[in-house]
Image 1 (cartoon, rainbow, N blue to C red):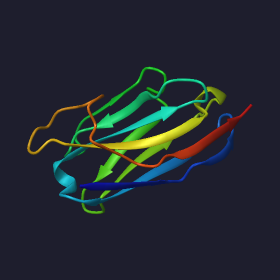
Image 2: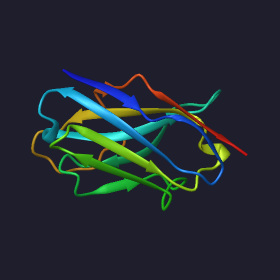
Image 3: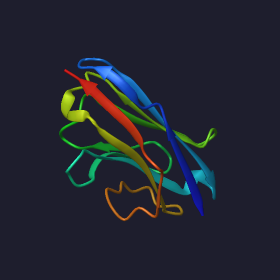
Image 4: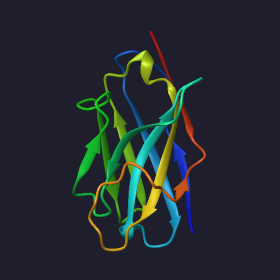
Length: 125
C-alpha cells in the first residue's frame, strides 16, 4: 500500500511558477514509478509528466514540454513538479500517481495503482 499527499498548489498569475510536491509513505519508494496528472473542470483527467523509479528518465505531455519538470528523490520519498511559464489553461486539480514496477526502469503513462487527493492550481490571466 502507498499513501500519497500532494502540496504546493495555489493561485498564480500567467507567466508565473509553482512547485508541487507529492510525499509518499508505504512500500519501497525506489521501486515505484511516479507521474502527475491533472483534471480541469468539465474535462477528463489527463497525463502531465512521468518519471522512472530511479528518477533517471522522464516524459512529458506535449502541452507542458519545456515548461514543467518532474523530479524524484528516493531518499526523501518525494516527487516534485516544477511548473514555469504557467498559462490559464494549466488551471486544474493536479494529482500524483504511483505504480509498483519492481526493478523495471520503464516510463508509464497509465495503469497507476495509487493516487493522491489532488491539489488545486489556478492560473489567472
